[in-house]
Length: 306
Image (cartoon, rainbow, N blue to C red; front, side, top):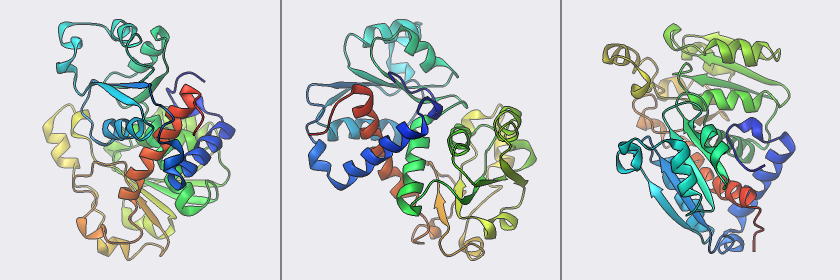
């Protein structure tokens, strides 16, 4: 596999090997500290990012490699009208591997068709976010010990949330996963995921509006923010942004071993009073993101750990 556009680019067996490698990196970081010496990662971020961009950079630096790139379209030749295809042809001359985030769905795929180096989709519009999904899977498997036999609640912006779309597509390949889709009517899961993925695969799911009604049955709660940048007008965003707020009172309804995940950044949807709850694992999740991106870089570059 040369590029990663979607979690489905990895078979379950390949995914298991990648997660095993990430766990080994976590346990033995010094073993991999020089694996990518002389290698360069290009980070082409046409859209704002903190965790994804910096975790990619941290991953490559932890492997002994170096990083070049840009953090906004305004600071690149895209501001002059350069196409993604031309940009990646040039970047292929400078770097060994590339992570690209773009507001347009399919832009990283277009780049991969013109690239001579591996391309990683670091998020394309409301479409896919495969490395966040790998992070989520590593977090779940590391802390729960499995990727099957659980009930997961997906809460918040399910319409535009690319992290949710990617995670659903990845998890349906594992047995006995039950989905609870928690959202207001306006932010329900789009038909292409509900019908084209869940129903098509005869997947067990139900839809709820109230978080309080769903939380007692959950083994995992995946919170998401209402994304201001995906709304066409400010009024709709303001009306929806505080629809869900996870606080101590709601956590009293949850199982003692339920885990709370969030791809971050959060706004108001998780109260800071939850941060000290041992079930809140979203900052651990961010750390797992570095390990899984290190494993992905090694896999795509076909580099062995030292």
